[in-house]
Amino acid sequence: MRGRFRDQGGLFSYLSPEARVPAKHPLRQVRELVRAVLKDLSPSFGKLYSSAGRPSIPPEQLLSTLLLQVFYGIRSERQLMEQLDYNLLYRWFAGLAPDDPVWDTTTFTKNRDRLQHGEVFQKFMTKLLNHPQVKPLLSDEHFSVDGTLIEAWASQKSFRAKDGGDNEGDGADFRGQKRSNETHASTTDPESRLYRKAAGREARLCYMGHVTMENRHGLAVAGVVTKADGTAERRASQAMLKAKRKAVGHRITAGADKAYDTKGHIEDLRAINVTPHVAQNNGSGQNRQAAEKLDRCPHDKARELWRVAEAPQNDRMHLWLGQAAWHDAQG
Image (cartoon, rainbow, N blue to C red):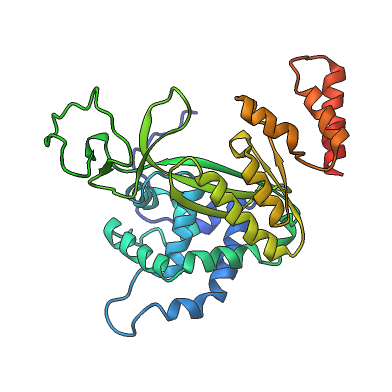
């Protein structure tokens, strides 16, 4: 029998958002951990607000909503509010009832800035990583670092000469002009820098984001955003690894790609009791000489096998050598 199509549902619903979320949904465990951490931070929240005036967005709901933005890669807070309006899963995680109004984007941004200036984000993530159910998941010995470009919300037309020598107007043509961060700056985002990801790629106004991951489950344990320049990745990784090494109290290892393969950076990491496992950058003769002088880890034989396995042979022997070298290096 064919079912009847009804374009509109009933006026009332007798199912709560809690009943609609599957029992094995991964956000359920995350929600329990977040609620426990937010409960412990409640005294810290009270110090940031006045006892008079209109009530703000509850900080517990604001932090939970920001976590959703990170989990699902929502590009802006305006889109976050839009999806929070109709997505029952998001409402359930943030603690909103189906009939609760969604906050204005400007109001949400101002409340977020208050928590950011009060260092609540750092306290929240530190408390979450030290939770009894989360801490056993984190490695305290082996870490990896990496960086990425974060495109600034500024157009190329805003990148003008600091002395005002550029022609004003949206129709200005910058072709053939030599522009650099020393002589030019963005008028809408002065802290952004013109930077290219690799040789042959276009230069963009951007920042640089850096993250430290633990190697047991690949969870992020530290992060920072800096200005984009050629040494930002190495400086930021050294600062994060130094803080992590002090926190754990013993020597740690750090894996990184070839962008970190410089003699000075390797020596600086060893000076702070961090053993670097850095991919070789064989792009120039200077880097090859530095790679020959520096030993990336004490497992010489395992490293040699690993380099053999990276050769362009695709037989099983080289695959086996690579696996054996990996286990030896980890041992």
